[in-house]
Image (tube, rainbow, N blue to C red):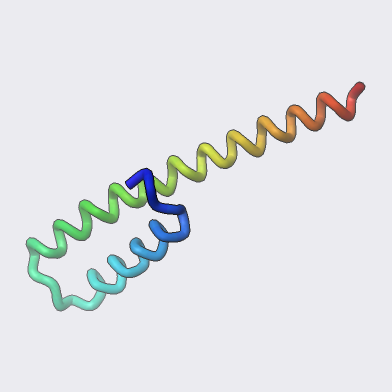
Length: 68
């Protein structure tokens, strides 16, 4: 999963939500999609956390440069 972009992961999550909300899946299919969505959600959360950290680090670096 590490090879997909955040945008691709979110798009896949939206597809899964639409399928789950359709009510046309078997229980087994629903469970598999739920598991996939949980993994995608964790992956997206991790990417966002990493992006936030990079922004904070960049802001701190720029703040240090401006202080001098």
